[in-house]
Image 1 (cartoon, rainbow over the protein chains, first blue to last red):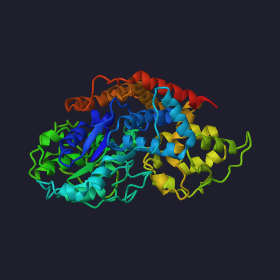
Image 2 (cartoon, helix red, strand yellow):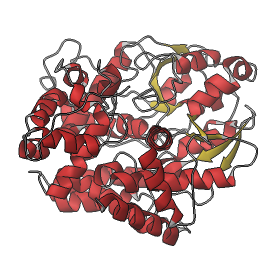
Image 3 (cartoon, chains in turn purple, green):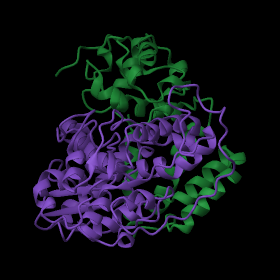
Image 4 (tube, rainbow over the protein chains, first blue to last red):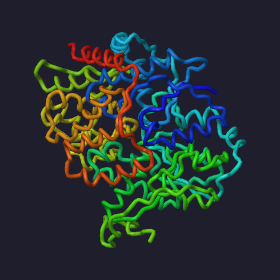
Length: 325
Length: 193
């Protein structure tokens, strides 16, 4: 199966382990990816706040390039939730709003480009893996089942909502990634926060708001008995992993819940070496959890903690006092 | 579905509602809000917002332009789309939040410049290089708006660097001239009446 591929800025760098693990497994699952040559940033959740038509035109350039370059496929996929949503949103809103379609194409014409909305089917990577390649085909390739690993499948927001093309079984309690992880031999835990927000840009513009959201998710995953959180988005991974360290400083807590990409777990189950999958580049070390499945994981660099947790700090909420040590 | 017409007089309270609706793409249905509060109840940053979406929409209807455009609420929107999928009236709430942000920037109406500052810094890098540049974004934004937090950010930056998860220099796309021409044209079209 072939698709045009939009990596996006995050996958190129801070989420490099996501890209590396995808590259490592794509051959095994018969996924051919044709990267859009000279793609530009999707605008994340920021460009749209400043200039709406320009934001759609920014995305429009990527859509136009993909349409022009595509050979033998009408699928366009992205692994980042925000990149996926921006591509899907511009396509959907150009289909819905004739005036927008005209304006964006007028802007694209200034660069010698054009995009016919609907020509490409924009789909998130997880959607293609679960629904096109399929659980059975993936299970058939598993050589090292992840037996004994308890995982919290975390979908975040922008893949399952607003879901312009009705791709998902639920906007609030989806099950596709849970089924995928089950096919790999892992045990998905039932938890109520699988589509709650990771904090998004609040980790930068209002960290106190983000810390509360991050703690809720990390705490919820741990309460549900998960050894790790499994994600499909660079922003979610960054907030829950790197900012978990900052969140611990803020609340004087000591959560240590690793956060990996679903492609990294697929790689382990397909027998790829952990290093090739970018495992070890996370802030919260995944090695102790992966020891449960006898995966030799390069240890993540220890992140220095400034001070010991204080027993009296944190919100006076039930269950919040419990710690690892 | 066709939305009910909004009653507007050139200077009456309905004018602001009409303005917000016109600036939001598609059939956004903002005039059909029934003030049920599903949006605010679903919002991850709702408790920190000066006005929940429900209150904001009542203020828009009442023509309270300054109060609405000064509110931190649109900036605290994390684009999670919970409100949008839960709204019984199918109002495109997240899209309305984007509209309010760009209207606030145009009107210069916000009391914390750090809120639009992040979006504007992000846009600057994209318009210069065609790609986002995380190190520059974090450094420049914090330098301008939260200088005291920079020292606190350093360990995380170093840890990112050690893990090869951050670039020291931005990457410029080949088609930068093409992208600039597209964006310039788009902005001209957006500004045209």
